[in-house]
Length: 136
Image 1 (tube, rainbow, N blue to C red):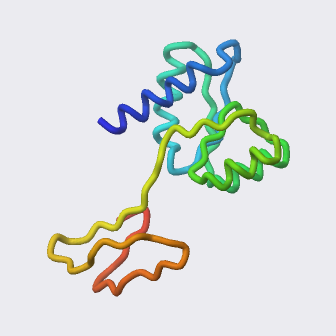
Image 2: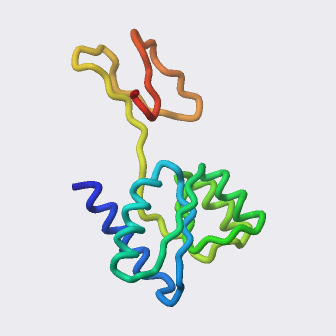
């Protein structure tokens, strides 16, 4: 269900930009690449307008924009990089669409209690492995 909502929101974004373009170039944070690709495919099927996706880290994409690369849409996983390109007057408008959270999932018998991440957070002792981003 959540994926369907995100896909709908992305299609809404695509349908509300320059519809006279022959193609739309999307610079997308790598973590959103699959979703953006699906939304782009749906958009292309409905409009005939090709959607080209450039997936990379938000910082890499921001630097590409800074050095002259063109994108119709910049989807960043980092507010700091959005602010960076906005302050350089590279992008016209910022529209927060999605949010993100960092979570820790533990076994049901874990004694680890809730804690809040701050700039100086030290992870509590963990008896076992920690997986980041890709549990595989």
